[in-house]
Length: 167
Image (cartoon, rainbow, N blue to C red):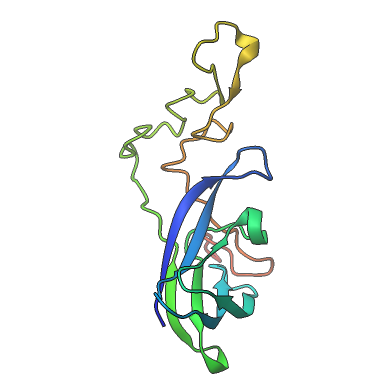
């Protein structure tokens, strides 16, 4: 079983250019394909998503993201190749680098996109008028720095409170 998996950011086609995270799983076999089971496990411990009997041809890639399967990847989520009995054979965890205050190489801690200065819009090259602005391709029109903006899952309903003391 030889698979290579990678996480990357991509611009969504479904939600007008919003930036999401995508996972690509490639079968690296040269001659033959394989059939595997996949599990996607959210970081908050809620119900995982299973994909059974995925057939890969040699060199084929499957992409798991918001546009393809409605999955919004968040920090700590992981995807795994499963054996019989849902035993994990190989897994990939989304662990984005977290920057401390003022350490972000893009925005230096102000959390605004440096390409559009936090407005979410840019003028395409060769335009002079403000009404010719388009959504910023780097932040997807949000105005938020995509380098230090890390998607996180909110605690599940009924779960333990986070950061609060009982007394």
